[in-house]
Amino acid sequence: MKAIDRLLGHAGAAPLAGTLCVWMLSAAIVPDAAAQRPFELTPTVGVLVPLSNVMSQNNAEVKQQPSLAAGVRASLPSRGRMGIEGAVAVASGETKATQGSSEATAEGRVLLASVRAVWALGTPAPAGMSWHATTGVGLVSRGSDAYDFLDGTTDIGAVLGVGMRTRVGSTWTLRADIEDHISSAEFEGGGTSTGSQLQNDVMISVGLVFRFGNR
Image (cartoon, rainbow, N blue to C red; front, side, top):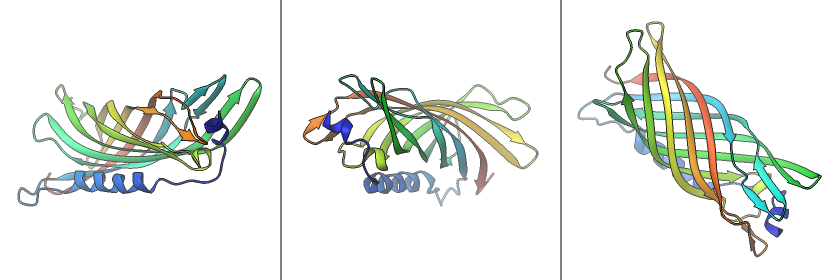
């Protein structure tokens, strides 16, 4: 219970997660200079919808609430059926703790970073619409007031998703994705542990694709 009591604390940060995010994103966008491969940069906006409690213990439950998110995706487009990309997104919103009729909220931040393969599905339609699936490995880091003084706020997991892209006019491409970031959450604080909780953090995002290099 002490770990849940500590949930509503003071502002925190995740420097390790930030460092890993930068590293993964950089690794994904560096083009093959000799081959002059193109790459894509896609700023994204969306919503994070957590499906699971981050803590559940002794009739007490803590859950990150749905919140707006912003991020960026860097991609090496496929020459065949598979491409590779790195992505990072941050969502900040309420974290709600309930126990019986008691309820409290605090600010909670969720940082998602991943490196994944992008698999082309089917054949692009004449209008320029195409579908893809994503599979990869991701990092989930939780911070800000709700998670201060807690250990175990960063987890490694899997990312599964599906998306589509379509041309907008003669120049732009719009991309939309829905992804499930699967991980486990187990926090420690005050000498106690919350126990492991399976997490399904669903990110729904849309972005305008900027393409650089050979087309």
